[in-house]
Image (tube, rainbow, N blue to C red; front, side, top):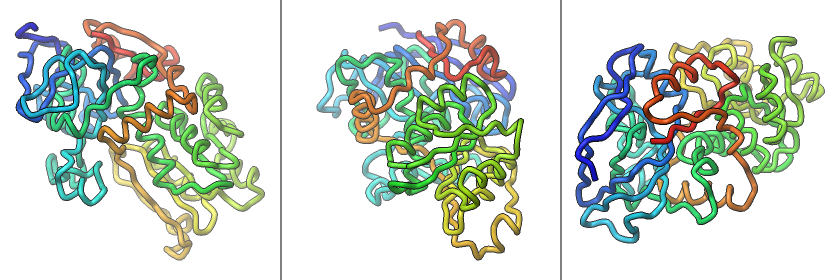
Length: 358
């Protein structure tokens, strides 16, 4: 094993560069994995733009697929050379939050002035996955073996995108027969659409204007696709639902306009499930909020992590219930990660997700 490795390093807002770092050494409860595939997330773009603060010098990335290179002395139940993933959220398994069933908020504090960054450590408070090697803390709570027969690309969405999208459907508490609207069909929105279908939604309305994403959204389960550049999405949703509104609206972009439209599209007593990462204050209009008398719920989600969550997601892929491989539209080597950031950050060439292979 080499002493040095390549890593995508955050320098300052507007600058992430490929640099060199020492290969980390695992402590007793840790594992070192050699990254075989990773990707870039929309949250990484927020970091690049300075909209989400992290320390200069941090390795970015929180979506690892790899092979166990070295195990800590106290880690049992795994073998070196085993193919694994780890979730973007890495709960310890023994914290108050973990033991209370809120694994995503394990370790929540006031770092960076945020109260609920929770168990998101990779590329946030510790070095992340856009590198040759990644140190996984609390390995026995977080490493999930990849089933035989599944490729890296088939499980690449599990650490974050699928977990987050499905989490939006789960937080919305979708019931069999519900009508659901999903605002924005980027990777997370597409997974939210798939999650809504899996949870039993009878009718799914996607809001999207990009033709390629419209096509994939239908494959993921959308029954209707509203092009917000051609018509007001709230009016269209009310027309489709015959004035009733939707039971659950999932907001998957992180903008005031989509948040407000999602709120306005709800039936009385409906739920707004918010997945977006917001970089500005939100305003809740009085009429859309029914002056606080509409019996509506607004729920936020930080994607669930931990090995059991990853196992369940990979089991869903293995069973053929969902196929997210189509979300990977571009491939790069780690040496070309700055080019990949430029492409993904500017959303050129029909990009959805990129696969980064060291």
